[in-house]
Image (cartoon, rainbow, N blue to C red; front, top):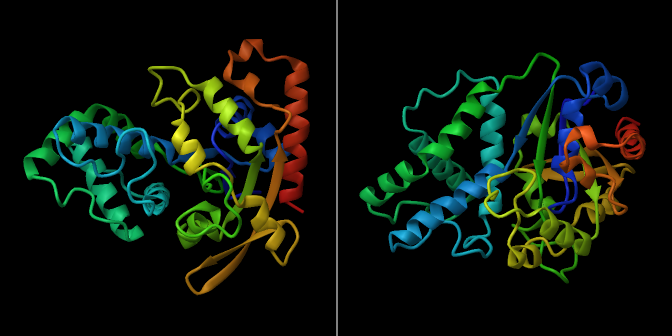
Length: 313
């Protein structure tokens, strides 16, 4: 049984589609075929989206944005670590009492400030006037409220599985090892010990060229906050996701079928497997489930079952 599944890949590789497929299965089928118990799902994309919203509001007010300047990459690349610390917060909240914060915008800003501090990134809002920060909190309150309600409602059943999705990479043309704060080597090292100690990693493999093409295909204007239909800016696709280091990390591990993660003074060997999606076994999952063909489902199931089998060997 998998306690924590890290679902990793370049953008638009099929991670969110696979999550959607798993949600259609009965609890018995998920357990029997994939070793997954009742699931809680965590994802850093909502935080990326809200960081962009915060930055847009700051620019509208004529002040320097804290996270993004326009559609480009992070201003401070250490915010890749900020995202991991937000995931750590979400994981810890699974067994917490839930937030009683009345202002969702303030709740989100406070969490981002704390996560950024933990990542060693620059100040988020300290350089902004208090009135500006309050305006930003009010402007994002509606979207932050939806996230607050989701985080507060999540509860992990005893013996359940936590699925954590995120994408990492580096500039196109880079070679491994990628320097921090790029790549999986860096981000995995920041995951909290209770996560790493229970984790297995499933990597969805597509080429960077396929990732960029599929990213363009899935992008729907007005759906920037959607898990299935958001588009990553092209500059970010080249500068942050032009390649990644997951399969390289597997090749460097002293134990077959694992990746080595250095976390503080510890070295952990995480079970790891690759699901080859270069033939695109997942895009059909964006459509209405009523249109999913038995042939497409059989191909997806066979490939996933083989990958999960390797995770449990």
